[in-house]
Length: 193
Image 1 (tube, rainbow, N blue to C red):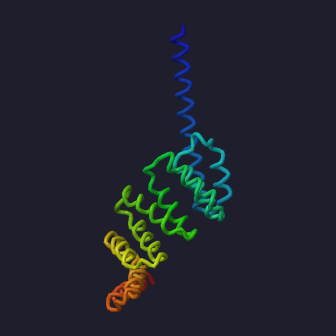
Image 2 (cartoon, rainbow, N blue to C red; image 1 turned 90 degrees about the vertical axis):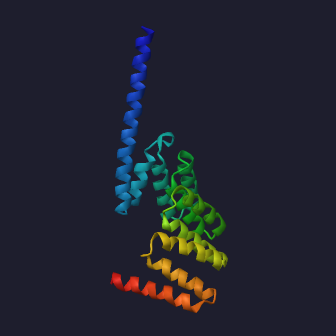
Image 3 (spheres, rainbow, N blue to C red; image 1 turned 180 degrees about the vertical axis):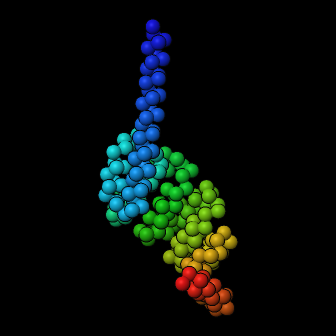
């Protein structure tokens, strides 16, 4: 009889966990849809219905994004860190945390986060680009150049990559290279018109 009760209890727990995961997934999907439609309050309210202990890294990330949109930067930082605690390989949380630090004028902290992203997802050009932007804020133009070039090596069709690299070359007194990248920038912009 004890075995039967134990088995029944195990099945009940497994069913409830599966149901909770499925429910959380549906809530997360709906919250992402609301967020994409700029229905931020509805997305936020839905995400808060998920118990903290069952939130996924994506739940935490989306909460962080909403709080950052609301300019509640300390709360957003907490949420991104929660996402990373839930999954240390969740590069999107490290990237958004880097963006948050860059927004807060903390370029060294931003660089540390972007370097984590580079290890987790080496083909993500924006981690290199934003690292270059952080080095620009520090006035370290050679370092910025290195990261802008890495971003361009991954994706050569982003106008901002070329523009910022042009600026770096200008600051390094290399007008010829600055003009080359400015011309690339203008070409990409013209193609989009």
